[in-house]
Image (cartoon, rainbow, N blue to C red; front, side):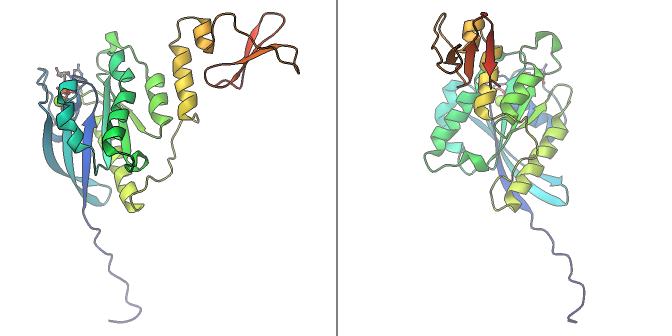
Amino acid sequence: MEANAPKRKEARKSLRIKVISMGNAEVGKSCIIKRYCEKRFVPKYLATIGIDYGVTKVQVRDREIKVNIFDMAGHPFFYEVRNEFYKDTQGVILVYDVGQKESFDALDAWLAEMKQELGPHGNMDNIVFVVCANKIDCTKHRSVDESEGRLWAESRGFLYFETSAQTGEGINEMFQTFYSAIIDLCDNGGKRPPSSMGVGFTKEQADAIRRIRNSKDSWDMLGVKPGATRPSSSTGRDQQLCGAGCAVITGTDGLTTLSGCP
Ligand code: GTP
Ligand code: MG
């Protein structure tokens, strides 16, 4: 072969990946997968018993990938079955129902369950997570708005999509972006590449914002007990810390300002 002959473009190896779905029962995990793989929607609720497994081939950018999907049952009853399936996962579809606040509040517990099952040597930083705020077609009953869901997801470096398995809105876009991010992860030696998106808040700041938004009253909002103050020698103003570790300064005029609070 001539030394200067152009090299034939090497055929890219097809990838094999493992993806799991997580989230409370009835949030729409199985329907999201069915909508993408079978282009249909089943209105009747058929609870997943333990785990459903499927394999599908998809084309993303110039790559063919073989996806092993493990669709988990969300009911606590199936914990013993689920816990076998967390390891060796490259991607997680984390779903909540925008009309069920508890399913959004449960996302932390789902992450904790996975973390516990992966054990002390498991690394969740190198897994691609996509959060699906599902059932956006049910606009009347919406109880978690987009900004709250997006903040939770993006402050953790997760992708965020608003979806409806019923209408199909957001589903293809979500899967394409999700698979694309997994390819980038595999091409980067299994490490999650630095994310280009994000809301500019850390996870702690985002949690504080969420607490403030959900607080009952202004004391709760500040994360302090009613009336508690600590005098500051330098400012002559009362100063204490709010729950997020930010200074809360009470002026002599009775006005309260948050210093450095997200
Ligand atoms: P488990 O398998 O028990 O963990 O539940 P799941 O999260 O897999 O829920 P599933 O996909 O079975 O959907 C639960 C119910 O919600 C079914 O009645 C679906 O028809 C309905 N559903 C799912 N997605 C949507 C959606 O986007 N919009 C509406 N309106 N209903 C949906
Ligand atoms: Mg299911």
